[in-house]
Image (cartoon, rainbow, N blue to C red; front, top):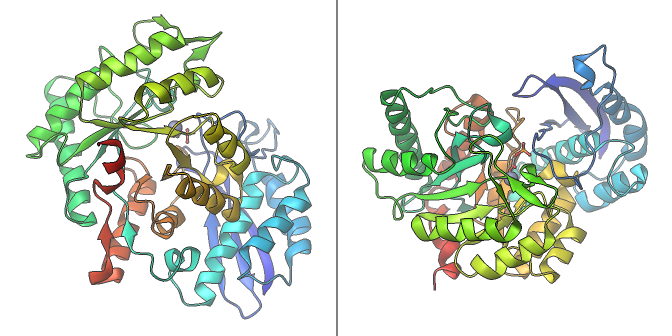
Length: 428
Ligand code: PGA
Ligand code: ZN
């Protein structure tokens, strides 16, 4: 059972404070989880509790959340069965008492929930993916590698936040990783040759000053070819323009590039044209803003039977909000971020809802990360075949990709690679 909780204020990959929580069981087994932090957050995400003490870390300290873990939460959950994740998570939600974990902080609660999940796995001598899922979990996802960053993740001239590649044609995960890394290096060479910066953004993708929001697509297609792979077959593209960040007074504003404004209808026309032009793009995340419900519905009607449409800011990994979105005919997939909701149980519930409704589920990191690799295991446990966890650079991103290599080796002949399989239903 849970004997002790310790929390530490550590730094994330952007140099901002976050929490590391260690759960110790009665038999001495212990495990640590580190909490990530987003920049382009959805409005309805669970609350990340910050100290707001401007004398420390510009107000971003997490000492209050740390104290909640070591006092109130520890007092409540001491003696709990670490293997009963659902009961633990329910107790955490009840103890907080708010609908969005605002009192104790979703960072405090997730730290505890995930640390206990890890401790439970260790206690049963199971890898986390087998402990969270079931012992037959063996599907390794085809990642979305975010090789070019814009929007709020880079101070460049690109409005869209993420330009990703997915090596869907590879025979297995490790070959897919190689293809992605080769493409990344080819992209670097192309940028260098054109006199563009090869410095990277928050998620490890390049962040050059480009001439338009479409130029990244052209450069990436060129890089795939240069690396010796076939765009649209070996490697496909995925965009997360994070349009909630562009939405102002009912319009989409391209403030970083050409300053143009688009109505929701014009935005959908834009996506339709772009997808007609670039058949290599197989998925679009947050193609409409969280506050643009009718735009999301129209987008889904227009493109939902053709490509994967992932909801991030609009669903915020919240089972209740997600169910309503499905009823409203919004998207055909969901992005899954543990800290948007704050417990392992509610996260797994969202994945289950996706599965039951024929939606895709893409496990995701945040732009502020640590070396914690739990989401790699979660992706294998979920068995939904997709994850996004940054580019093939920056240690906090690579940690997850390397974790899959370990899992692949551990599974041996049992390992399967998702490849293009998840997209088949949109390509009839
Ligand atoms: P965030 O961005 O972690 O900064 O919120 C990730 C995303 O929008 O998918
Ligand atoms: Zn997103």
